[in-house]
Image 1 (spheres, rainbow, N blue to C red):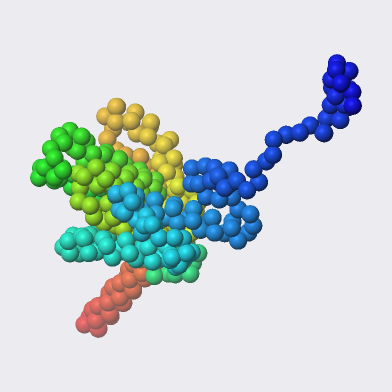
Image 2: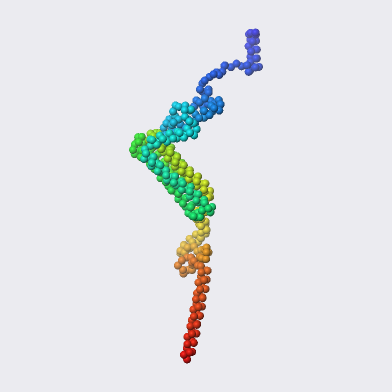
Length: 381
């Protein structure tokens, strides 16, 4: 063995020539630290060693997300079914689990909500369902008429009925939005959850401010904006319920009503877009396009008409052309009372021939009568 400074030099040289021989502290192979084996430092769940563990962890994470959603709908943290201390294998998983939780939340809501509120809320959804069904049906009828598969009504009538059904749904939606905001004013008047003043009054007018301008939009944009307004209104009700400004059952009650209304709006948008004849905003067969063409055709006559009125001539523009059939329209003479004179040349020709024949027969009868009278005079002489 080499001792002294020479030994230190040999060890240093060997260390640099063989770096893999460096000794490290022994690893803690059997460590059971939750941080070391955690797949997510926040959830503290163990890492997935195989597919079985992966599926198990996914189920556990899905259960936590589901519990958060249930708590959010209920308006209070930890009120969901998944917030209990039961293990992940204590209840069925997948679609059956979600369906069971939805039923439990619904049953709890039906038990907590006063029966009159349930009945009136369901009645308030019926106009949405009926107008959505009517819109889809009329959109289909309009498509059939445009393609020549239905001749009971014309295209303009079918389009007008469809627009009327959509306007009824939009108008009703704006009214309901203002009603939902007014509920918060009622809570303030009754001092439910305390007297909050302007904060609750402002919450009450937010749905109205969002929903009212939708009346000036096209049907598609109006329905989309009202869908967003209903979502915002439900979020406001959720926050109010969580803060204790509304009954505990109110956010769940409003969630299901909003879901029904949103489904009706989506059905209307999907159905009318599916059966729409022309994807543009104005159909080429619609009344709007015809009015546009009429204005363009009469655009050249408007300046002339203005000049005539400035000169004191109050007569309107004069047109001359043929009307379908045997009727002919012409400009009236200056002495006539009207501006347009309607003629039927064929009938006028028939009337002229008939009068000529009648005059000819009349002349023949008169000449024959004269001859008879002249013969009688000769006999008397």
